[in-house]
Image 1: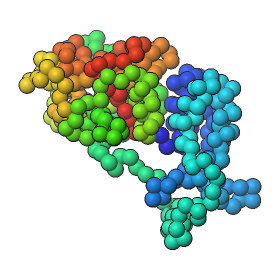
Image 2 (image 1 turned 90 degrees about the vertical axis):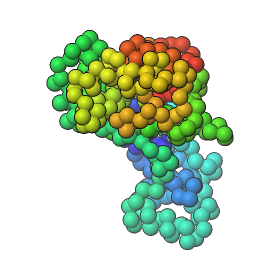
Image 3 (image 1 turned 30 degrees about the horizontal axis):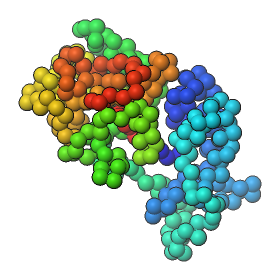
Image 4 (image 1 turned 60 degrees about the vertical axis):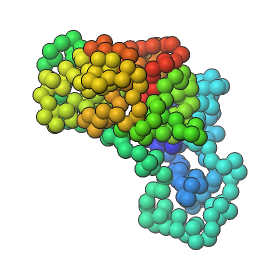
Length: 335
């Protein structure tokens, strides 16, 4: 994961370990340290830019604030949690602090500095360039406020709107969701492409490691709810009535995803990139594992799978589960 450069992004990482209230307080302290440094990439090489006591910019191949952040985290987390959390907040660079000129050719240095300092252009690699994504707007988008005025027709719709209100109040930032569910390539790396077996069978802890290794993160319950609100909004834009869209997402998702009773059901996993609806493929087919929620006492499991019916595991179905893994679940990753 790239270094968290905004206070609320840091808070999201810390919430997994500390809970909302304490995470907000610690995020303030961590942010004050992290904002002193920016991380960049050029031709696949990561480096950091700091400002020294004289106001001059210093380029290093390793984070200069990492130790300071580690000291702060040690006050609140167990030793193994410190390293895990630190890895999410700051990606360590090459182990020795070396000037950029020792890693780049002279012409590359000038080109890089021109982009970073003169042009003010960020060169941090965008993982999203490799695959298609859906943008989910942050909590302050008017679409959600309008949706909250909808009169629910069932308990499942009422519960979804309650979850949506929580997500709106949580101040979630805009994020991206891959169009295809995750799979693992021949080299063991995470990918979001069509035509592959979904990456099922991983424990929650394994999914966390996969996320860190591949520069993504497991989405939270609040993010998932905003994603579903986006699906509802898109369905309405495509001509569905609000009532039908809410029913399909909240109560019976047979028409939207791949379930045992869906049309042309395989009664086994479909390959990734199947049944594109409202811009998203692979709705249902597998359960989706979300980020751990300290207040709920475990990680959230959303939606349903090809082994169940659409009214038993609708897209809006959310259950808190502490089991180690599911054979018919994938991680729900976001950027």
